[in-house]
Image (cartoon, rainbow, N blue to C red; front, side, top):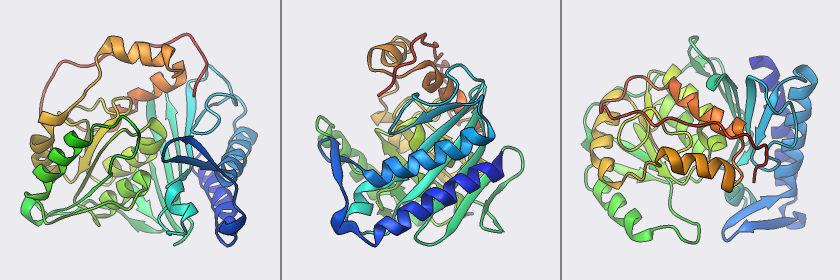
Length: 311
């Protein structure tokens, strides 16, 4: 399965690289203010889905651009796909973007591939077998002091985001760490934590396809990932913090006051009223990749929705 995912990621990367040489003729649409989709996103997603379903026609698909239009609707295997994470960077010619593909079985991510076509860097992991970049085994950093840590993050860009909350959050973290970085491609940021380039990463507003593959790559590299309170339930909570074990614990303490963990009834409503289908909710259990969190709270149970519609 990993080899098929790698094949799909490289095929999508080839489409992206070709398109990057002719950005002037690129057709760009706006999904919402500051949230873009291009014909390249759609072409890359199409080749990924075709490659995966050719090998595994009975598997489900959860993809950023086409949702659940393809694949088996109720399969225990669900591929979670972001064909071009960092679209805004891509359309500006900034070479910080990637392809992200994960496979969840019964809600637990088993395979993960993140491909950076600009550098030909392939990050991948199989549950229980470690994480790699190309042929090099990945391990998270060994730094133990927050004051020495380089932290990756994301900035708010959607209409309606609580910018005052973000500013307070950034001030809290910036005054405690060695530096903050915001490249603009969350899947790649998570891989950089796994590789030890960052000591940790945090962001809000992310979708399952932004973090599914990176979550496995981090845990297989010896890191931790969870929500702002340190719980392993993060995939559908739209807040994530990840890092090496020592830095993770310290960062959770800083971010806990800013948590917006969604209550059970809100998750169920989101799964139906806002179009998140059963496969997306099932995929939320991929948070089971995360090792024990430093803080204990009552688990947030995720209810399945019977609908198959998605955004």
